[in-house]
Length: 350
Image (cartoon, rainbow, N blue to C red; front, side):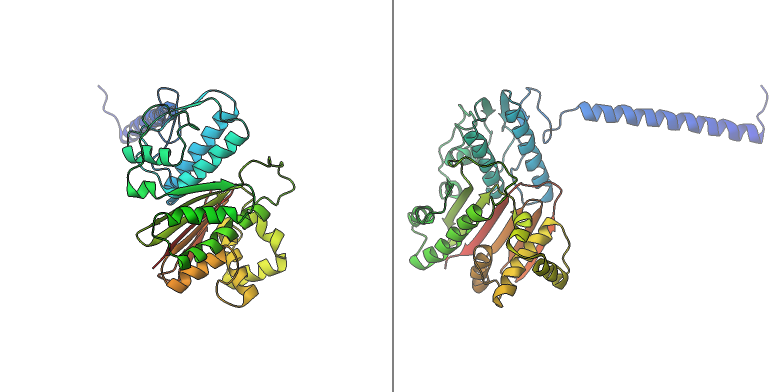
């Protein structure tokens, strides 16, 4: 056998290397195809053809936010197709108030448009989650015939919900009366709550749906949804609307000159989180006092005076958070839009 020279050996090594690289590329391509075809619990249908609900249903972290919105998008596409829709909640072992509020609002919107008719669901294996679905009266909407659990846990039974399509003193009064039944809401706290709740609902009616290009909503269709709870001396209040969002309504309420001046002053950009921050600062600028104003600024003022509590705002692709203990706020943007606004307000009542 002829002994290979130096150049022949080098050429032989290079040929083997090219063959190995070609084989690796082919294996990676095959693996990629396999992954594409493999169901993913958070994005695909499961083996029974049902849309798998992620865990947790939440907006707080970026990962939970993405998975929750992806699930809601797939669910709405299936329901509006229209075709029979089955939802699998079996692996959903945790839910948060913000995610469940958005989920409830989207479901009720589909119900009032006449689309939520052919939906069936399999229940969660987690007792706590089944309690939440019963407390929020979602079982019938979702076609959950089996696996219902009566609410018994304190962190479930104290949650109250309300929705409506108009501004009326009756709504905030009704919410407050229900909270008073828990014996943890005094008259002074009730007045604070009444101011915040009524202004949040007022904003949903007169600003959130102020978009002539949008199709008109049915008069009976809800325009706002509220979750509230009083427990251990704390009020938890969440309000949702599926309107145009703060980033879109901001230039409808204020001049571009004012908005641009605020953005320059605070070094803000053009994403939705920066627009929410601008909206909060405009309320301060117009009154000359920190956080004075109506609605969200008023909520911020209340927890600011207590030096405890938290205000979180999600609107379209943006988020804003104010921590009263530190006196600092933070804000930013995300890729997917919630197509509306959610306010999360936590305030001490002692």
